[in-house]
Structures are given as structure tokens and as C-alpha cells.
Length: 77
Image 1 (cartoon, helix red, strand yellow):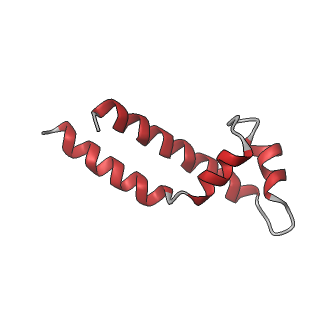
Image 2: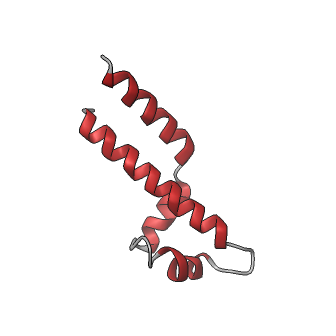
């Protein structure tokens, strides 16, 4: 993976992290995921509901740490 693709992957994971923060801020047991997506996430990040479910199932923190570590080692090689 070259630096450009690695950088794009890191940016995607940071965007996923921001989406998860919004989701966790507004999600309560009595509020459906679709409502959170429609009222709070979609106006800021125009993603589909299917993409939201993909974001929710992604281990963002672990993937981001792994991507940043490999990106840093590649910068100085």
C-alpha cells in the first residue's frame, strides 16, 4: 500500500471515528438508530444507512492505530 492510499485510509477511519462520536452522543435505548442517522449524522456526513451500519461494525480504534503505525514506518523508510 503506498502512502497516498494509506493516508486516504487513515482519513476514512478518522471520519468513521467522528461519526461514531456523534452516534454515541445521541443514541439512547429509546431512540432508534435510524432516527439518530436521519437527525444528527446525515446532515453532517451524507452517508447511507447501510454505510452507517458498516461504520458501527468497524473496529475503528484498532484499525486506526494499525494504519497510523504502518504509515509512520513507511515515512521514514
